[in-house]
Length: 163
Image (cartoon, rainbow, N blue to C red):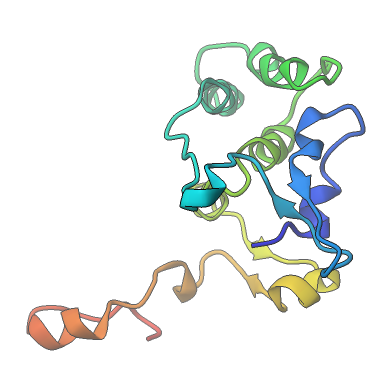
């Protein structure tokens, strides 16, 4: 899976995470994540299950939504560790963008959008990579269809609406 230009544009110049993408001469203009390189000969990637930076960003989001704590300290703990200057203030949008930069290609973005009630909107300029995708929230496509095998073998199963 290659990185979209929309994602790559979120990285600031000093952000060390911007260097975690590789290009190949055969595919000019495309960048692939090299975030957790595994052992090439085994084709095994290292998978991180839980990270401290994710906990900081969860707590920052919670603080901005009324929980106890100071969002700016948690937000800056991640930023400054990535080579960026500390921010003077933070908004939910800032935390969401930081989560996207920090956790990209780890399977969090779709869950984050769903959890926060935000739409999935891929910029039309990205269609050469992902196609034209615009899924408003709420929409039936936020729930996947139930597999035909499950539907056929369980008379009590009811298909998700829209499928």
